[in-house]
Length: 148
Ligand SMILES: Cc1cc2nc3c(=O)[nH]c(=O)nc-3n(C[C@H](O)[C@H](O)[C@H](O)COP(=O)(O)O)c2cc1C
Image (cartoon, rainbow, N blue to C red; front, top):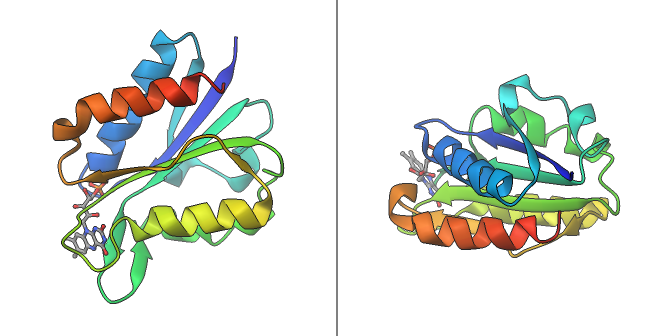
């Protein structure tokens, strides 16, 4: 059975809810899923035994892109992540009325490129309430599961 690690940073619960929905879909597709709040995650946890690593952060800030407050210190350690050639998928919640819609996801995408990770699907960017994007989340997660 393939194994996936889902790590999320979430302030008001939107990215957390998204992570959990993604996790349910992956489980239904036969993937063994571990979901962790970023506050309980070390960079050394990434990759390793996991066939797939999913990283999710909401975006805060305005003029500047800011990661979700718990995700920010974790992002700063990502240069040490052993993700070269490893399968990764990215997601996050945001609001398109801000200048940098889901800017944190864009920054994660750049970081994964620097690290040589294999991003398996276009990142999932949720605009507003993830409860209104359930079918998009399911479709995205099924596509990700097909790479696990
Ligand atoms: C002060 C503030 C700043 C925000 N800045 C951005 C932003 O720059 N880009 C964006 O896409 N969303 C921005 N958002 C929207 C949040 O990312 C969005 O509400 C998201 O669903 C929160 O997810 P979370 O509950 O997982 O933290 C901002 C929201 C607030 C309240």
